Image 1 (cartoon, one colour):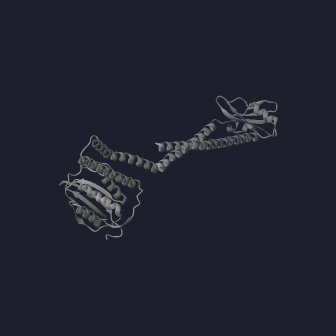
Image 2 (tube, helix red, strand yellow):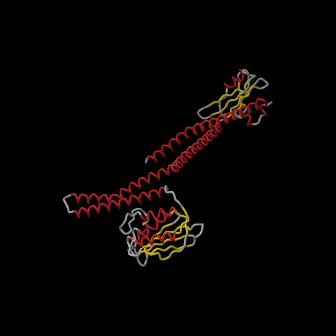
Image 3 (tube, helix red, strand yellow):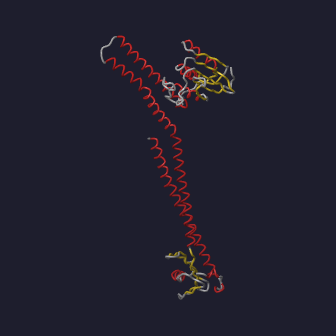
Length: 395
């Protein structure tokens, strides 16, 4: 939850910061573009006024030059040169008369319906010319420019915010996985210790409820010892599984004969009285960690022996892989559990911790291999481990 809040706060901080910075740049850029457009219009209006002022015979000037244009005299009289749709611009004409040797006099005018420039310029004959230059189209152009600039700025802010959200999620993913792994471990440990602790408590309470014979105390202590050993074994498996899934296990890979490894495991189990045999043993070399692969194969064999009377082990080469197959004559996996048999606490036969096959899957995956399980048509279960062969050869 803290990581989610941190990600959200970081994204908001970057979003607000980029909004301020990009917004300021956008406002400045929009202002520059507006000023440049307005300056261009002022220059165009002044050029038109200069053309009109330099025209020798105004009554012969083209229509575009005479529209919204006036001629004025030093006595203050003013007359239109062509069609007009505004009042005569007397003020700017007075400014031009007051400074006949100066540059063009320019005034910007806003009305309820129009926006335009008034530009007055003196002629060589002592009269002056004033024109009106409409700016309504220019205002629309400026508005479009601002809209484009602000839209681009909003897009940049949105992209920066989204990129921050995605990058923060990717950067925090390992920490989030670590937190999830810790929560899973605590939940799994509580799950695994609940039953042994309950057994220990119940057995101890019963033993202490009244005086008993020594044989009864021995029986109670034996149950407590068994429950303690079961809890300890479960915690060790949980720790191994947590390290494997967290990727903190350092693999010590060496060329390893899987067939000889399986032979040792079968021989050890058989020496203890288990009905297990190695039926096929094709020579096959993999690059693997001896301790971990030994643990994986041994877990599968022990898991089969816990539910069956007889177990068979095969080691075969198939294309560029070696396949270790363990079959038994037991009741097989519960069909409801079979799709999830390699998950934690999936007890296919109601015994054990439900962690052994989960460990097997993690170990095999760490070696680039695959695991699968099925029920045999003739009865019993089948577990298969597939590992890539070593590039150094088969041994």
